[in-house]
Length: 274
Image 1 (cartoon, helix red, strand yellow):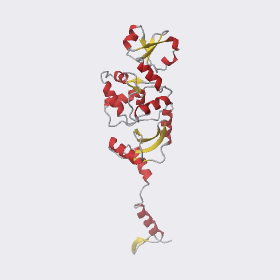
Image 2 (image 1 turned 180 degrees about the horizontal axis):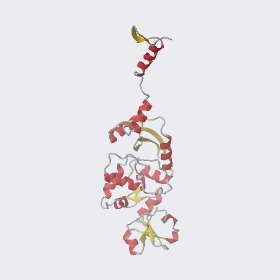
Image 3 (image 1 turned 45 degrees about the vertical axis):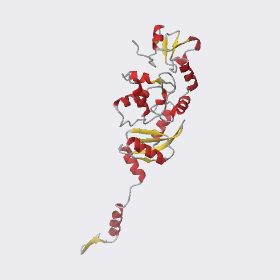
Image 4 (image 1 turned 135 degrees about the horizontal axis):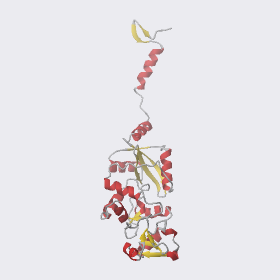
């Protein structure tokens, strides 16, 4: 049997020489780009992105080990990457095969189903902004709330404008549903993912009729009361939508509802119960 090393000339011989050569070549091998992206993403040190079909068409979704970090529309990969870098101060890489579990969670969220695997990366936002977005996340699919509702719910009733600004900075619209927040006068208001028209599309996809909502707003109807229970709700509340039309009464303010002897719904909380 040949010795691996010639004692008179300590260099690898025979098969050992080939082994050493191959080991040296390992140092020249670069890891696949997909592996680098996966590792950085899992560690939360970088973001990967892919496209997802939604009621607004294809959108870009970026994510990392902390959760979904961005949802944006874009004309091209390059345009999205530039926007992501400008907004987050770091780069994002295209992922050709997105995680199946994440895609499933996003799809379930759009369909109004439970999505326990869905998490969000809200780094870079202030405590106030995070509170606003997490409160918006509580609004049920197919319902809307005014900016003032969020302000009151998070204990900042005078910060209605600031709530609007925080929603405008939502890095993950669609999935943190800022499209379910409307102006206090009942009109649609703006939407960071494509303006009022995009907001209308999303609400219609969730079963609401934007035209009917705006008609209520023009009529000055802010709340719907039930004459049998003496409870009043936001018009899109699931309880209000069950009330037959003959049993409905419209109110233009909380004060008017209270004066008529009605109490606020415990589900949609149009006002704090006294």
